[in-house]
Image (cartoon, rainbow, N blue to C red; front, top):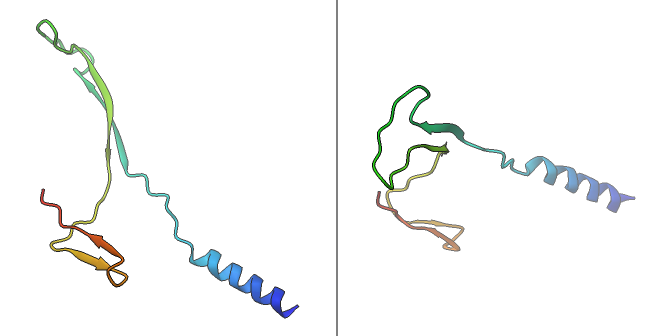
Length: 79
């Protein structure tokens, strides 16, 4: 019985500590040209473009980061 109680307590503690990965970012629909707008194109050029843009947050580091004693390394990316 004690093992069952211990197992249940550990299960509930683990469930409470689980992170939520439900971040989606901001999506925006794109369309060129706008409705009612006149567009002049040459041969082989696109007359219409449609799609969507997804904007998400990101982390930026100024130097190499080591996590968990060097098990993971996040390199510096120059933009």
